[in-house]
Length: 176
Image (cartoon, rainbow, N blue to C red):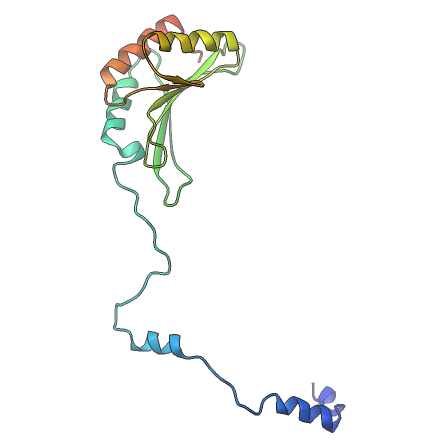
């Protein structure tokens, strides 16, 4: 470094020195705020909204529904996970059947609800379009509202839903 500075002409040295003649300006406003704040008066770097404790799988209506439906003649596979929301919402789904494999004909799922996904519904999955039409028609004949494989239900009516699903499974047993 010394060697490089020795090779500079007098004009180049003066040009560099002129850039620093005004002194340095240091911003200390934030440092003063930090110094003068009272002990324990810290500000959060990020605000997070809290997830209500009764959302998703913690909702009492959902808990009641799961307790009723887990004892069906075809018990559900229950998946428990957190959503990708910020903050994450504790979520759960009950699943029956499969569309995969030699005996697979349809899949059936009910997921917990929360403020981001409030719709109480049964999702029906089927690779066979003719069978799918029959399954959806079965629910429509009972007066349920259908929207592209999504059957609107009421989680509060767990006893009736248990009876309806059991009747559905008698006619269309899910594959395991």
